[in-house]
Length: 595
Image (cartoon, rainbow, N blue to C red; front, side, top):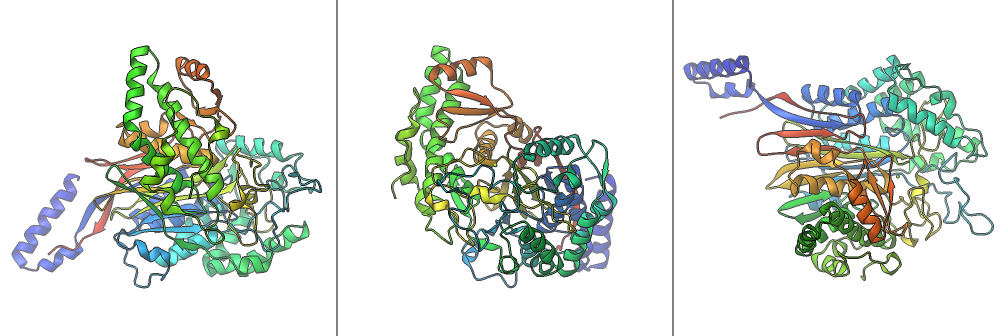
């Protein structure tokens, strides 16, 4: 606290003592700290601005998400969907929905599913040819690749329930950036050029991506007047415009003209859903994360619990490694691969949209089940991928942000178009990109999607079904306080990136910045014995893993973690050096009533 603020408080206290009116304390402002970790500087600036204006974490999240739809078009979106994990101990909700989310009121945790849905015209075999083979790229590029978007409805519903500032106020920063423009970064310019080349020969129907985003140059001021008009309509009419109004009609007209699947009936029928978050106990923490149709929360709790159950076995292997001259990193990397194989086998078999299948969440994260799953983990050799069955009973592009306000409310939000720039289709007149999330279904059970992840019948395509995801917005609580807010983009590597970041902070005692910048490794059952890594591993570790029988691949991209950590002394905020994010901890003056 600076000298001026201290003097102001002392003078106010003296005034109260002389007047005897203790109720005047209600007008005093105290400095508390808020923290944000955002994927770009524009969203960080707006999140900070909203919090300093008196908004809560949800206000900042809504405003930031709309800003990213302007400044981060490769993943920030109106035409996609996502998930939001919330902790709201200081937000009074007079009329909470009477749904499954009410079961979590004691913890003040909530989860909003605004994932895309398959259109009514979708069918299980829609991406297969006459020989029952997957048609390359049909679920990824073009007009039939999109699910019904959920982002606008999700932001509207969370605003109606938890926000404190007006909807129009929260959209104004995005409107101004769309109208007046923003400076194109090297990341955006490079990604747009890559995507333009990548889609060039992958759609039989001409796409309009290049006319909107194909010629971006570093330092160029990008203005998006069509998008600005769309945001103004949404600011005035709320979600109604996007799902029933002029924007809805623009979307359907263009998609139907090119044999797309989404209709006005699909849009009118879309709702985001409040679901019960996954909550797991681990080392005294409550790990709160994404339930199905995300696989992330279950997988992260499974990884953390199995690691803890097998810690003695790991410690013995590390001791033996030190005696024999092997690198400890080699043993830990192999250990993570053994755990991850089992988790991804469960993912493929059990997980899908809980509105369509029964997902045994409690069983999958139970101590007993995971002890059984961990029995086959080997520390001296590689388990055969073909023998690992389920237990008995996303170039990926997404974006994530983490926010904690000065009252202790927290938002962990991950949303996406799937591939960078989604399907390559821009809605003309409205200025936003459409998702290509239909590829996240099992287009054919047993066949891998663009991220190499194999799915099963549980994730087969069906009308109004939500496709399985790896997005893992996560919050860690301890003794009723937020200790960590974390998440990342990265397709199938999201789960392993969040898991390793949590371990880096809690068990490896790293700072927030060290935890997100540390090398990460990834194994997802198939391809067999392949370990991906980023940014690099020591040569000795690579040689030792190859001698064990692994093949190694350096991923050009493995997440962009946005992390907030509550230490004993202060908040730490970190944005991954793999991206262009910004992380801040800052003071916010908040009115406080004192007796």
